[in-house]
Image (tube, rainbow, N blue to C red; front, side, top):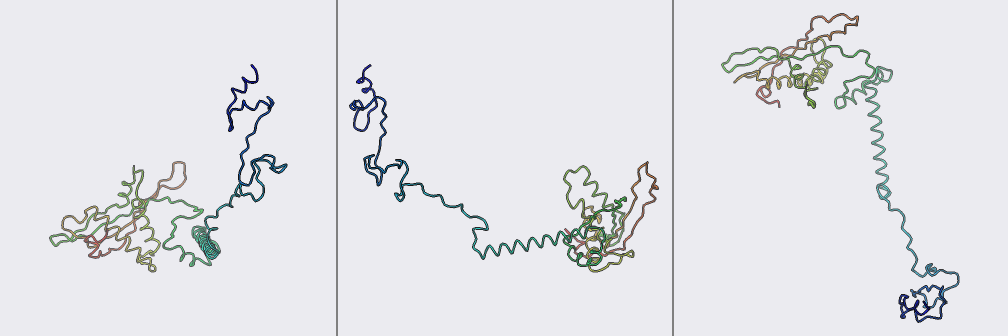
Length: 285
């Protein structure tokens, strides 16, 4: 194959077939050049030592420098707003630390701080943040406590009668047993009401402070609601008074223990409470 045949098969350029440039050597490679902005069409006019793809300074064809990272969040706010956010975060942090410290002192064993500042700790905790557990409790609860109630009913015929004892704790136990997701009221409402009553009343069932009166009203309303669910008043009857008692039974010790066997159940009987008319006729829901 001669040179004429090779050039006839070469690709066509801008000025026609490359086969017309027979004076070039067979090993040379043509590099096309296109004049750009600020450049002449001749390659010889390009400054010596500068690459064709490397623009000179000030020619406007170089890469645009990327801007710095965009600011977001608090950094994007003005200085006064940043100061306000910092102050708000500082207040929240201080309040959280104070609250955690108060809760810890409330549940911790008795110490010098709790003895000297016990009232301030109680004022912070009660009633919103009350805790019913203690750290390092030496003796777990070993008693079963059942809250029971009965009612004095005004019958539709004008007579009165007294119901038997309703075991409200047993009703809660039956509702919880086998229930994978028992409600909070089934587990804690009655139990916490009784615990609050015991903490705010003396041995003669006299309220100690304003929380004692509140605890009495709270327990009474729970009892009236439970008796209403059980239809204790019957058809046409109205609950006029209720009475609550607590039965405490010791948990039997294990066979290997040397503890004595539990004795007979102990009862704490509360006085009769008159039920207001709005509560007796369904005012508690």
